[in-house]
Image (cartoon, rainbow, N blue to C red):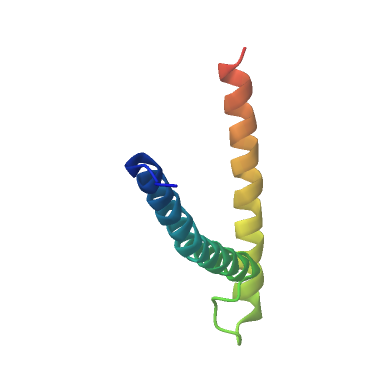
Length: 83
């Protein structure tokens, strides 16, 4: 049986797409895991000097309150524009 050129092109394109999918999966996973680790360190206050406990807890509280405020702001804007 002789393959048609269209079938060869289709197989080659599928092979290339599978290869790109395999290569890009590692990059995305790696980027997501590093972003999550940075976020954990940021919100836990691990990016501060360890000898100043007041500064660490002050930043933790401030960062937590900023997240609460951001959620409140999104909620308020959603209600304002969806009425």
